[in-house]
Amino acid sequence: MKTESTRRWLALGALAVAMLTIGLDMTVLTVALPTLAVDLNADNGALQWFSTAYTLALAAAMLPAGAIGDRFGRKKILLGALILFGAASLACAFAATSGQLVAARVVLGVAAAAMMPLSMAVLPVLFGDPAERARAMSIWVTSTALGLPLGPILGGWLIDNFWWGSVFLINVPMVIIGALAVAALVPESRNPERRPLDLLGAALSMIGMLGLTYGFIRLGTEGWGDGPAWAVLGAGVAALAVFLLRQRGIEYPLIDLSLFRARGFRWGTILTVLITFGMFGLFFTVPQYYQAVLGVDALGSGLRLLPLIAGLLVGARLCDRLLPRVGAGPVVTAGMATLAVGLGLGALTSVDTPYWYGACWIALTGAGMGVAMPVGMSVAIDDLDVARAGMGSALIQALRQAAGTIAVALLGTVLATVYRSELGDRDVDPIRDGVNSGVAVAKATGDQDLLVHVQTAFVSGMDAMLLVCAAICAVAAPLAMWVLPRGRKSVPESRTAADATESTHVG
Image (cartoon, rainbow, N blue to C red):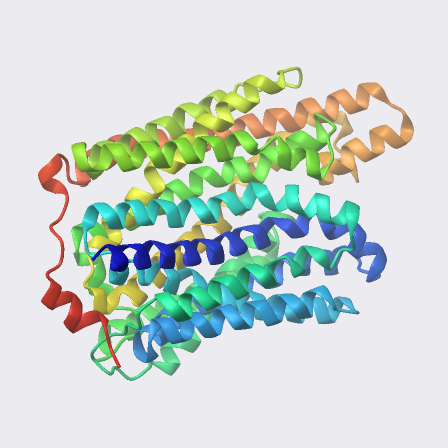
C-alpha cells in the first residue's frame, strides 16, 4: 500500500514538471523578443504572432483534446502530447525564419492544449481520497503558476549566456522526464463508454474559440472601435452558439452540458474563472510597471516577482491545512478576500512607491491565489465521475483560457483609457501607444518631465485596472461562502474501490 501511495505522488511530480514547462513557455518568450527581432528579421507583426499563435492554438484545441483523451485513453494522448511538445520545442529552438517559428509555436500550443486538461483529468484516477485529491490539485495548480514568474528569470539568464533558442531547449529535458514518469507511473484511463467523436462539434468549437480569442486579442491591441475585431468576435460567438445548440441535441456531445447541473462543478468553474480574471491584472501590468517605472530589465522584473512564488507556496500550504477542517466554502472565501485585499493595496501604488510595498501586496495576492484556485478547481472535479474527467477538465481549462484572454482585452482597455486620459495634451503618437513607447520617447529626447508624466499616467491606469480586479474578487468572496459546502462533513467521501476500478483502469 505504501508503494502504491509513493507511486501516485511520483506520478503527480511528473505531471507537475509537465505543467511547470507550460507555465514557463507562456512567459519565457517575452525576454527573447528583442533578440528575435534582430536574428529573424521579425517586424512587430511577427513578434506579436510568436505569442498569439501559441495562445490561439491552445484555446482552439483544448475541448477536442479532452474528448479525445476520454475516448482513446488519457495516458496515451497525454504521452503523445508530451512528445509532441518536446519536438515542437526543438523546432522552435532551431527555427531559421519567422514563419517557421510561428508554425512551431502553433504545434506547441496544440500539444499544450492536450497536456493541460488531461494531466488534470488523471488526478481523480490517481487520488480517490478527497483530501489527497485536493492536495494534489494544489500542487498541480501551483506548478503551473510557478512557471509564469520563473519564465522571465530563467529566460533572461539563458539569453545573457547562450542564444535565443535556449529558451525553448529547456523544455526538452523536462518533457523527457515527464514522459518517462507518465509512461511508468500513470495508469491508463478512459470513459468506459466507447463514445463516437463529434467531429463537426470539434470543428465548431475550434472555430468558435479561435474567433473569440483572436477577436479579444485584436480588441486589446487595436481598441474597441476596430471593425474587423468585432467581425471576428461575432463569428466566433456565432460558431460557439451553434456548437452549444448542437451539443444539446445530439446523443454523444463533445461536451456534456449537463455537467453544469452539478452544483459543485458549476460554481467551482465559475469561481475559478473569476479568480483567473482577477489574477490576470497582476500578470498583465506588474512586469510593465517594473520595467517602465522602476527601470529594471526583464531578468530583474522576473526576480522581483519572486514574492508571488512565496505567496503561492504559503497559500498552497494553508489550503492543505484548512480544507479538511472548515470545508471548501470558507477556504475559497478566504482566498478570494485575500486576493481582493492584495489587489486593492496594489491599486494604491504611485510612481514613488518603494519596492517593499509592491513585494508585500504581490505576495498577498499570490497567497490568495494559492488558497482559492486549487480548491475551486477541486470542487468542480470532485462533482464529476471519473469517466467524464477529461471532458470536464478540458471545459474548465477552456473557460479559464477564454477568461484570461477576455481579461487581457478588457483590463488592457481600462489601462489604455486611463493612461491616454492622463496624458492630456501629450496624447500623441507614439506616446499614446503605451508606456514603453512613451518612456522610449522621453529617454530619446532627454525630456525628464515627459518621463514622469508618462510613468504617472501608466500607474494611474494600472491602479484603475487593479481596482477592477479587486472589486471582482471582493464580490466573489461572499458568493463562495454561499454556494460552496462548509464544514468537515462537506468534504465528499472517497469513491469506492469498485467504482474506481470499473471507471478508471483499462487494458
